[in-house]
Amino acid sequence: MTAMWTHILANVTEGDGGTLQTRLREGLVRAIEEGLLRVGMRLPSSRALAASLGISRNTTVLALERLVEEGYLVARDRSGLYVADLGHVADPMTSRDAPPGEKPAGHNSWHSRFAVRPSLFRHISKPANWADYPYPFLFGQSDPALFPLQEWRECVRMTSGAAGVSLWAADTIDEDDPKLIEQLCLHVLPRRGIRAVPDEVMITLGAQQALSLVIRLLAGAGRRVGLENPSYPDVRHMLAIEPCRSVILDIDEEGLKIGPDAASCDVIITTPGHQCPTTAIMPLSRRQALMDLAARHDLILVEDDYDTALFEEELALPALKSLDIDGRVIHISSFSKVIAPGLRIGYVVASRPLIDELRALRRLILRHPPRNNQRALAQFIALGHYRTHLRRMGRILHDRARMMEEMLPRYLPLCRWRRDPGATSFWVRDPQHLGDSVQLAAMARAQGVLIEPGDPFFVTPGTGRSMFRLGFASIDASRIEEGLRRLGAVMTG
Image (cartoon, rainbow, N blue to C red):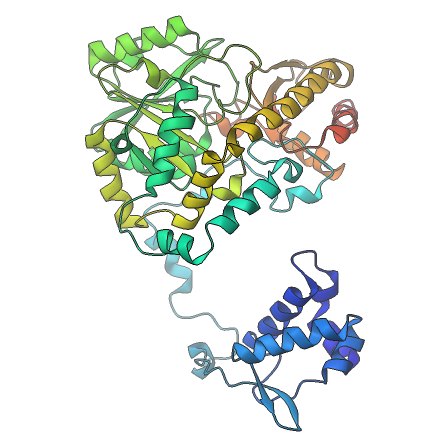
């Protein structure tokens, strides 16, 4: 008995998510749903179960009582607790005559039915358990220690009472939380030099969905869409599944180059705040030249402002959208890099006709992003936590950037790198071509070091084999030096 229950509920004592009571409830529910605990099966007494798991009896009693309330267990007088009949629907596969495990007819023909194969695209690869590695130099992930836990918890509590729930629990079809839109217009967008009214803003599931919606709306058949090279791979993939024609636009030390290829486009997607992945900041003169080009040739500019709001080391340039006088710039950003990637709240700022169409398109896909997260974030900004968090995070990231700049010459002396002010990553080039960065990443991973190979950022496979990206928002400062030392040792053999 003890061995069986210890096996079934192993994660109760070994897990690290939630309280013991919560983990015990989750473990029992999972065992019941998966059929490990069958209908009518009698559970051990609370005393015996607590003893077998090595936890307190009070914790066990509270967990079992809650499962009785929720219908997973049935209490019988003077008899004990039993697994309830939840009315599971039988698995249709088990009712067939085919042997267990046999795949349904047509399983092997799926590949011929796909219109596109996104799984075959060259993606940025990051292990799902990246936080388990001691030296994660990854961009787009955040050090959990940087999350404003107490402040966020306060905002969630404030929006989770009866009055708060009534504000976000209803299905609002295609509308966003008005308070979040208000806070964006008052406190977030002005930091980027943008003045907007509520009808010009829409909330999305991160910048990723914003880019996807804009591309789907504008990249129709016969349209020419300009794309930086190198650039964020997923934008290239989004364009690949649309009927448009992608136009590859070169970059230089100042970001996107302005030339005939750019002038031939209908839409240009650009990262002027920090070019992805090189971190180059487009100077004001070139931004103005790009705006002039757009006006002369009637172009639409999509500004992916993915991480510019994190921290300012020097006087930051305002967003490209701040120069927009005739509504041809679509500004996209998110709170993923600022607060946490898993929050999945982004936004689009554009002229009202475009926002109206984006909202209608979004409705067809998911109606609106979760309103509870929207309202909690609105409260977070309104209480001043957002501004305070930016200042704190800015100081920490600035210190990490200085450490990286001091240590890179020591541990990667043969490499060259770039990081423009405010960027949270270094774009590194190995001029000695000591090896393919994909192979380098694999060898470094074996030493507990995670880096991002440069190849997926380029249109032509193999172009970025001597380049890689080192992010520092995801790694604690105390681990930076050892991580770079290990990486340098891998590179030099």
